[in-house]
Image (tube, rainbow, N blue to C red; front, side, top):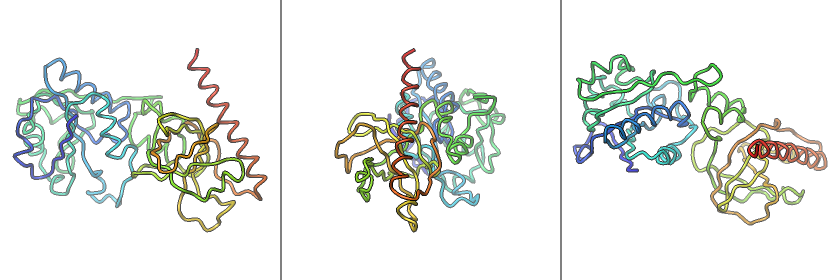
Length: 320
Protein backbone atom coordinates (compact mmCIF):
# COMPACT_ATOMS: atom_id res chain seq x y z
CA UNK A 1 0.00 0.00 0.00
CA UNK A 2 1.29 3.44 -0.91
CA UNK A 3 0.73 6.10 1.76
CA UNK A 4 0.46 9.66 0.42
CA UNK A 5 0.36 12.64 2.77
CA UNK A 6 -1.64 15.56 1.43
CA UNK A 7 -1.98 19.11 2.71
CA UNK A 8 -3.75 22.31 1.70
CA UNK A 9 -3.14 23.66 -0.86
CA UNK A 10 -2.49 20.49 -2.85
CA UNK A 11 0.84 20.21 -4.67
CA UNK A 12 0.61 19.47 -8.37
CA UNK A 13 3.05 16.60 -7.76
CA UNK A 14 0.44 14.99 -5.45
CA UNK A 15 -1.91 14.65 -8.39
CA UNK A 16 0.49 13.27 -10.97
CA UNK A 17 0.39 9.69 -12.16
CA UNK A 18 -2.55 8.65 -9.98
CA UNK A 19 -4.50 5.77 -11.51
CA UNK A 20 -8.32 5.89 -11.62
CA UNK A 21 -9.47 5.27 -8.04
CA UNK A 22 -12.36 3.88 -6.02
CA UNK A 23 -11.99 5.72 -2.71
CA UNK A 24 -13.48 5.38 0.79
CA UNK A 25 -13.69 8.62 2.77
CA UNK A 26 -13.80 9.03 6.55
CA UNK A 27 -11.79 9.63 9.71
CA UNK A 28 -12.03 5.90 10.56
CA UNK A 29 -10.84 6.00 14.20
CA UNK A 30 -10.90 2.37 15.34
CA UNK A 31 -11.42 1.02 11.82
CA UNK A 32 -14.45 -0.69 13.39
CA UNK A 33 -17.02 -2.95 11.71
CA UNK A 34 -19.00 0.00 10.38
CA UNK A 35 -15.85 1.53 8.87
CA UNK A 36 -14.93 -1.80 7.33
CA UNK A 37 -18.25 -1.84 5.46
CA UNK A 38 -17.26 1.47 3.84
CA UNK A 39 -13.69 0.42 3.00
CA UNK A 40 -14.69 -3.02 1.69
CA UNK A 41 -17.39 -1.48 -0.53
CA UNK A 42 -14.74 0.83 -2.04
CA UNK A 43 -12.53 -2.22 -2.62
CA UNK A 44 -15.42 -4.16 -4.17
CA UNK A 45 -16.19 -1.27 -6.53
CA UNK A 46 -12.49 -1.09 -7.44
CA UNK A 47 -12.46 -4.80 -8.31
CA UNK A 48 -15.69 -4.57 -10.31
CA UNK A 49 -14.72 -1.44 -12.24
CA UNK A 50 -11.04 -2.20 -12.77
CA UNK A 51 -9.89 0.67 -10.52
CA UNK A 52 -7.23 0.96 -7.82
CA UNK A 53 -8.61 1.00 -4.26
CA UNK A 54 -7.98 3.95 -1.96
CA UNK A 55 -8.88 5.31 1.47
CA UNK A 56 -8.79 8.96 2.54
CA UNK A 57 -8.41 9.82 6.22
CA UNK A 58 -7.47 12.95 8.15
CA UNK A 59 -4.85 13.86 10.76
CA UNK A 60 -5.04 15.26 13.40
CA UNK A 61 -8.58 14.69 14.64
CA UNK A 62 -10.84 17.51 13.32
CA UNK A 63 -12.06 18.39 16.85
CA UNK A 64 -8.48 19.32 17.85
CA UNK A 65 -8.27 21.85 15.02
CA UNK A 66 -11.83 23.13 15.24
CA UNK A 67 -11.40 23.93 18.94
CA UNK A 68 -14.20 21.92 20.50
CA UNK A 69 -12.50 22.13 23.92
CA UNK A 70 -10.09 19.40 22.82
CA UNK A 71 -6.38 20.27 22.94
CA UNK A 72 -5.44 16.69 22.27
CA UNK A 73 -7.45 13.62 21.34
CA UNK A 74 -6.31 10.11 22.23
CA UNK A 75 -7.27 7.51 19.67
CA UNK A 76 -8.74 4.03 19.47
CA UNK A 77 -6.29 3.53 16.61
CA UNK A 78 -3.51 6.14 16.40
CA UNK A 79 -2.44 6.88 12.83
CA UNK A 80 0.36 4.27 12.65
CA UNK A 81 -2.06 1.55 13.80
CA UNK A 82 -4.78 2.76 11.43
CA UNK A 83 -2.33 2.56 8.51
CA UNK A 84 -1.40 -1.02 9.49
CA UNK A 85 -5.04 -2.17 9.69
CA UNK A 86 -6.05 -0.54 6.39
CA UNK A 87 -3.00 -2.02 4.67
CA UNK A 88 -4.09 -5.43 5.99
CA UNK A 89 -7.40 -4.97 4.14
CA UNK A 90 -5.58 -5.00 0.80
CA UNK A 91 -5.97 -1.31 -0.11
CA UNK A 92 -3.68 0.16 -2.79
CA UNK A 93 -3.46 3.83 -1.71
CA UNK A 94 -3.98 5.63 1.59
CA UNK A 95 -4.27 9.43 1.52
CA UNK A 96 -3.63 11.11 4.88
CA UNK A 97 -4.85 14.70 4.67
CA UNK A 98 -3.30 17.17 7.13
CA UNK A 99 -6.37 18.68 8.77
CA UNK A 100 -5.96 22.45 9.28
CA UNK A 101 -8.29 25.44 9.69
CA UNK A 102 -7.59 26.38 6.05
CA UNK A 103 -8.54 22.89 4.88
CA UNK A 104 -11.65 22.90 7.10
CA UNK A 105 -12.75 26.18 5.50
CA UNK A 106 -12.92 24.75 1.98
CA UNK A 107 -16.39 25.00 0.51
CA UNK A 108 -17.98 21.58 -0.13
CA UNK A 109 -17.57 22.03 -3.89
CA UNK A 110 -13.89 22.99 -3.47
CA UNK A 111 -13.25 19.88 -1.37
CA UNK A 112 -14.86 17.61 -3.98
CA UNK A 113 -13.14 19.35 -6.91
CA UNK A 114 -9.66 19.23 -5.35
CA UNK A 115 -9.61 16.14 -3.10
CA UNK A 116 -11.94 13.79 -4.97
CA UNK A 117 -12.16 14.73 -8.65
CA UNK A 118 -8.59 16.12 -8.50
CA UNK A 119 -7.26 12.76 -7.26
CA UNK A 120 -8.76 10.91 -10.23
CA UNK A 121 -11.52 9.31 -8.14
CA UNK A 122 -14.03 7.50 -10.34
CA UNK A 123 -16.09 6.08 -7.48
CA UNK A 124 -16.44 7.41 -3.91
CA UNK A 125 -17.82 5.53 -0.90
CA UNK A 126 -18.70 6.95 2.52
CA UNK A 127 -21.00 6.31 5.44
CA UNK A 128 -24.49 7.83 5.46
CA UNK A 129 -23.38 10.46 8.03
CA UNK A 130 -20.12 11.57 6.35
CA UNK A 131 -19.83 15.35 5.97
CA UNK A 132 -17.34 17.45 4.05
CA UNK A 133 -16.50 21.09 3.43
CA UNK A 134 -16.91 24.13 5.64
CA UNK A 135 -19.06 23.51 8.73
CA UNK A 136 -19.90 20.04 7.38
CA UNK A 137 -22.31 21.56 4.88
CA UNK A 138 -21.52 18.84 2.33
CA UNK A 139 -23.37 15.57 3.03
CA UNK A 140 -24.11 12.35 1.20
CA UNK A 141 -27.35 14.01 0.08
CA UNK A 142 -25.46 16.86 -1.62
CA UNK A 143 -22.80 14.65 -3.21
CA UNK A 144 -24.83 14.00 -6.40
CA UNK A 145 -24.78 17.77 -7.04
CA UNK A 146 -21.12 18.33 -6.04
CA UNK A 147 -19.90 15.32 -8.05
CA UNK A 148 -20.63 17.18 -11.31
CA UNK A 149 -21.25 13.69 -12.75
CA UNK A 150 -17.47 13.12 -12.72
CA UNK A 151 -17.71 10.06 -10.45
CA UNK A 152 -20.24 7.57 -9.13
CA UNK A 153 -20.74 6.96 -5.42
CA UNK A 154 -22.02 4.50 -2.79
CA UNK A 155 -23.62 5.46 0.53
CA UNK A 156 -23.26 2.90 3.32
CA UNK A 157 -26.27 2.82 5.68
CA UNK A 158 -26.06 2.79 9.48
CA UNK A 159 -24.39 -0.37 10.82
CA UNK A 160 -25.73 -1.55 14.17
CA UNK A 161 -24.86 -4.09 16.85
CA UNK A 162 -27.35 -4.72 19.66
CA UNK A 163 -29.81 -2.17 18.23
CA UNK A 164 -27.26 0.65 18.56
CA UNK A 165 -25.07 2.24 15.90
CA UNK A 166 -21.48 0.96 15.81
CA UNK A 167 -19.48 4.17 16.18
CA UNK A 168 -16.13 5.45 17.42
CA UNK A 169 -18.05 7.42 20.07
CA UNK A 170 -19.65 4.23 21.41
CA UNK A 171 -16.28 2.44 21.48
CA UNK A 172 -14.64 5.37 23.30
CA UNK A 173 -17.45 5.33 25.86
CA UNK A 174 -16.97 1.60 26.52
CA UNK A 175 -13.20 2.08 26.81
CA UNK A 176 -13.64 4.87 29.34
CA UNK A 177 -15.99 2.61 31.33
CA UNK A 178 -13.50 -0.29 31.14
CA UNK A 179 -16.02 -2.56 29.41
CA UNK A 180 -13.31 -4.03 27.17
CA UNK A 181 -15.13 -7.37 26.75
CA UNK A 182 -17.75 -5.69 24.52
CA UNK A 183 -15.26 -4.07 22.15
CA UNK A 184 -14.61 -7.10 19.94
CA UNK A 185 -18.29 -7.10 18.85
CA UNK A 186 -17.86 -3.55 17.56
CA UNK A 187 -14.28 -3.61 16.30
CA UNK A 188 -14.38 -7.09 14.77
CA UNK A 189 -11.18 -7.81 16.73
CA UNK A 190 -9.93 -7.29 20.30
CA UNK A 191 -8.82 -3.83 21.35
CA UNK A 192 -5.03 -3.61 21.31
CA UNK A 193 -2.37 -1.16 22.48
CA UNK A 194 1.24 -1.32 21.29
CA UNK A 195 4.35 -0.42 23.23
CA UNK A 196 7.58 -1.85 24.56
CA UNK A 197 8.84 -3.42 27.78
CA UNK A 198 10.68 -1.07 30.16
CA UNK A 199 12.37 -1.52 33.53
CA UNK A 200 10.05 -1.11 36.51
CA UNK A 201 10.69 -1.38 40.25
CA UNK A 202 10.90 -5.20 39.91
CA UNK A 203 8.73 -5.67 43.01
CA UNK A 204 6.48 -8.25 41.32
CA UNK A 205 9.19 -10.88 41.09
CA UNK A 206 9.85 -10.65 44.85
CA UNK A 207 6.24 -11.70 45.57
CA UNK A 208 6.10 -14.45 42.94
CA UNK A 209 4.36 -12.48 40.19
CA UNK A 210 6.97 -10.95 37.87
CA UNK A 211 5.48 -8.27 35.63
CA UNK A 212 6.41 -6.63 32.35
CA UNK A 213 6.08 -2.85 32.58
CA UNK A 214 4.73 -1.50 29.30
CA UNK A 215 5.42 1.96 27.92
CA UNK A 216 2.89 2.69 25.16
CA UNK A 217 4.40 4.01 21.95
CA UNK A 218 1.43 6.14 20.86
CA UNK A 219 -1.55 8.14 22.10
CA UNK A 220 -3.97 5.28 22.78
CA UNK A 221 -7.09 5.50 24.91
CA UNK A 222 -6.11 3.48 27.99
CA UNK A 223 -8.88 1.61 29.86
CA UNK A 224 -9.47 2.95 33.41
CA UNK A 225 -7.49 1.82 36.43
CA UNK A 226 -8.13 -1.76 37.40
CA UNK A 227 -7.14 -5.34 36.66
CA UNK A 228 -7.86 -7.00 33.31
CA UNK A 229 -7.50 -10.41 31.68
CA UNK A 230 -5.24 -9.81 28.67
CA UNK A 231 -3.16 -11.56 26.08
CA UNK A 232 0.21 -10.13 25.09
CA UNK A 233 2.21 -10.60 21.92
CA UNK A 234 5.92 -10.49 22.73
CA UNK A 235 8.97 -12.29 21.30
CA UNK A 236 6.84 -13.44 18.37
CA UNK A 237 4.26 -15.36 20.41
CA UNK A 238 1.00 -14.70 22.26
CA UNK A 239 0.65 -15.32 26.01
CA UNK A 240 -2.26 -15.12 28.46
CA UNK A 241 -1.96 -12.94 31.53
CA UNK A 242 -3.39 -10.28 33.82
CA UNK A 243 -2.74 -6.57 33.52
CA UNK A 244 -2.84 -3.93 36.23
CA UNK A 245 -3.52 -0.37 35.10
CA UNK A 246 -2.97 2.06 37.94
CA UNK A 247 -0.80 3.74 40.51
CA UNK A 248 0.02 0.77 42.79
CA UNK A 249 -1.49 2.36 45.95
CA UNK A 250 -0.34 -0.50 48.21
CA UNK A 251 3.29 0.53 47.61
CA UNK A 252 3.16 4.12 46.44
CA UNK A 253 0.77 6.67 47.87
CA UNK A 254 2.32 9.53 45.90
CA UNK A 255 2.40 7.99 42.40
CA UNK A 256 1.24 10.35 39.66
CA UNK A 257 2.28 8.40 36.57
CA UNK A 258 -0.07 5.68 35.43
CA UNK A 259 1.63 2.31 35.07
CA UNK A 260 0.65 -0.64 32.88
CA UNK A 261 2.02 -3.92 34.23
CA UNK A 262 1.38 -7.34 32.73
CA UNK A 263 1.96 -10.65 34.52
CA UNK A 264 2.16 -13.43 31.92
CA UNK A 265 1.29 -16.98 32.93
CA UNK A 266 4.06 -19.60 32.62
CA UNK A 267 6.50 -17.14 31.10
CA UNK A 268 10.06 -16.61 32.29
CA UNK A 269 12.01 -14.87 29.48
CA UNK A 270 13.93 -11.61 29.76
CA UNK A 271 12.00 -9.28 27.44
CA UNK A 272 13.30 -5.82 28.40
CA UNK A 273 13.31 -3.48 25.42
CA UNK A 274 11.12 -5.74 23.30
CA UNK A 275 7.99 -4.63 21.45
CA UNK A 276 4.74 -5.76 23.05
CA UNK A 277 1.09 -5.64 21.98
CA UNK A 278 -1.58 -5.96 24.69
CA UNK A 279 -4.91 -7.47 23.66
CA UNK A 280 -7.61 -6.42 26.18
CA UNK A 281 -10.14 -9.17 26.98
CA UNK A 282 -12.00 -8.78 30.28
CA UNK A 283 -12.29 -6.32 33.19
CA UNK A 284 -11.70 -8.25 36.43
CA UNK A 285 -11.84 -5.67 39.23
CA UNK A 286 -11.05 -2.12 40.30
CA UNK A 287 -7.61 -1.21 41.61
CA UNK A 288 -7.45 -1.62 45.39
CA UNK A 289 -5.16 -0.63 48.22
CA UNK A 290 -4.25 -3.64 50.39
CA UNK A 291 -3.20 -3.73 54.03
CA UNK A 292 -0.04 -5.64 53.18
CA UNK A 293 1.83 -7.96 50.82
CA UNK A 294 0.02 -11.11 51.97
CA UNK A 295 -3.42 -9.70 51.17
CA UNK A 296 -2.15 -8.43 47.79
CA UNK A 297 -0.68 -11.83 46.85
CA UNK A 298 -3.97 -13.59 47.71
CA UNK A 299 -5.89 -11.19 45.49
CA UNK A 300 -3.45 -11.53 42.57
CA UNK A 301 -3.85 -15.32 42.86
CA UNK A 302 -7.64 -14.86 42.62
CA UNK A 303 -7.24 -12.54 39.61
CA UNK A 304 -4.98 -15.06 37.92
CA UNK A 305 -7.42 -17.94 38.52
CA UNK A 306 -10.34 -15.92 37.20
CA UNK A 307 -8.36 -15.01 34.07
CA UNK A 308 -7.31 -18.66 33.59
CA UNK A 309 -10.97 -19.73 33.84
CA UNK A 310 -11.93 -17.08 31.27
CA UNK A 311 -9.27 -18.22 28.78
CA UNK A 312 -10.08 -21.92 29.36
CA UNK A 313 -13.78 -21.24 28.70
CA UNK A 314 -12.92 -19.21 25.62
CA UNK A 315 -10.68 -22.01 24.34
CA UNK A 316 -13.49 -24.54 24.93
CA UNK A 317 -15.93 -22.42 22.91
CA UNK A 318 -13.43 -22.18 20.04
CA UNK A 319 -12.99 -25.96 20.04
CA UNK A 320 -16.73 -26.67 19.74
